[in-house]
Image (cartoon, rainbow over all chains, first blue to last red; front, side, top):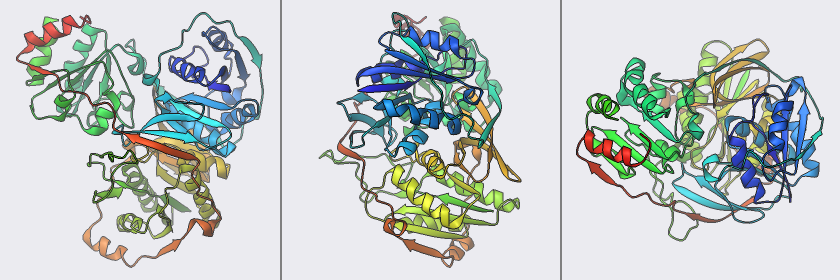
Length: 309
Length: 248
């Protein structure tokens, strides 16, 4: 089987999320990558170095600069004439593009796979991860998105794949990119952080969130996450949200502070290696999944913890 | 402009799903069902656009069993003008749903199709994008803000790194994210009024769509259960635990 993997990037460097998708694709067969962008040669060079990659397709066009689904999906659909499976990381970019590709190919996408069980059989979470479904596709081609936390990352070095230029339909004339507000931060990205400190509604407001959570995260070199309640209340921006419909994370250590543990939040973090919870409500559901729990007033306990570490 | 709002009847978001012992699926007998929360946000946004004079009519659509009528009545009580139930007792996958919606859109010619980014039962996150592809129209997924202006809609999208704004030519498909709005509750008088609003019943065959499943679910199982660990007495004990993990 020949797979085509969507390379996630910002036209300058390749995003980590790609590497787990490469591993998943490798379980199906030969791995080809697609770098679609504008002035994205450096990304293709990086992609060619990923271990286990057979070929890198580069499609360099102004119309692909922001990965608008209207423009890139027809390109992918065309390349699928020569591939059997399209594999994308389950990032917001992958989730935006892959179903559009699937519909163009008239196949049912398999979203957010956790494992590859056979040529056409996969497991995937449903009901916020409260159930795991095993599904088998009867379509002639596969379109898959991959949950990054479920697969090891492919080695970013060691490969020397050939880079081939491809072209396809360009600007569909349906949509245009206007602007982007991307948070600049020195912190580790949530989906690849080793440690995450996450705050909930109990943090009161954005100043308090910052005062309580940030120093601890700084001390641990951690990424910062939040529950939906904290994001909805405006304490932190949307890209902090961990949960069923936000980011799915699985760090070495996840520290949940003032988070009660709704099933939608647990769906996003319960595969973390160690979960630590600080909450003043000893019956909070978060304690049912936490390896280490501290029942305490977070406004006293967290500053003390930060100081003593 | 008309707005088409597809809504799905799903397990209520407060209910913890139970996997059936025989591995055939999740037990939905006697379980509270509600409108998919993301679709509620879509209904709300459509109503706000109508209130702002940007839309004239809101048509709610649901594809599912007879009981999905209740979900449509909820949409009508919130403020949708009429409803279409495409009745089927079979499971319908996003691709087939998108095909049915495409056929309805061809009849109704909406300027916007507004729907939830994903349903909280199958967590597919596909229908809006598929519909956009089938209609050959633009998509604004994971919408945080929607502004309709003349023949275009500007959508601020929630993306992994933050927010991205795109401008789409109408007609367009918009899928909603959590921060777009806070849906209203239907008032009692509006619930009464909703009972008199038109609700048409159709079948997938009326739209010439084959809903045969492309994916076969061979098993549904419980995820590995995480055991609760221990509670520590004080911060000092927690410090010791964290140090033992080698991260500080």
